[in-house]
Length: 276
Ligand SMILES: N[C@H](CCC[C@H](N)C(=O)O)C(=O)O
Image 1 (cartoon, rainbow, N blue to C red):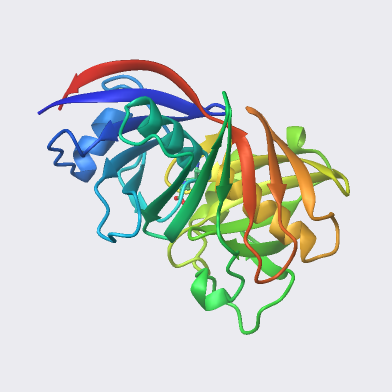
Image 2 (spheres, rainbow, N blue to C red):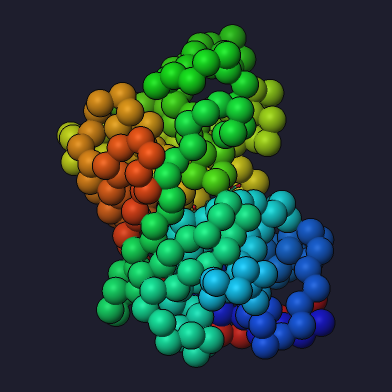
């Protein structure tokens, strides 16, 4: 199968975007892994497949695959790149785009040259819906990992996230502890692991060890989840600049029951064709 694609990134979280509307695309987990492989394929953190919507009231559907081939529910940086991709491929000229994902319907607002704002919907905090094994919902939870007890937040943005507060993200054990928590038995669907350093009520630094990928240069749903976890503990205001290794996202969340809005760049790098 010969597939046209566009390589894009959101603050260094990189994607292979495939138009499944004007092309017939049949993906398997093996094909996703091959495309995502940085030696035998194109290389990406996630592959995003754009399809016609099943719901007539929305504009598109898009499906998200991690580099390990697993299909997941949501992808914040990917949503911004998706919005730019469908406009650049003239699949729409709308500035407000409704897209159906496995996590529900997102509203994307394309703002001028580079910035895209995404209504990511309200965070999910009930443990069973994250999913996370806990007796009651709380601002934070004790989590035993290899004999140590950590205090973690647990939030879903359609995909599961856990958040640890750290003194300094540069020295946090992102790869060792991130890998251990990603597969922790209390997260039955595995989990994305965020390490959050709060600078003040309006600024924070974040590194994310992503489920199915490992550490990425940025994670949009991770930035949303980290801000929510900090806000329900009263540590930050309703708008926070979250700086990840790849750059800064603006996250806005008034409080429980309200949607989280994420604003940041979406960059196209090159177009190509791959044979899989
Ligand atoms: N990079 C994505 C997150 C992908 C989440 C995926 N790793 C998962 O398994 O949920 C983002 O910008 O939100």
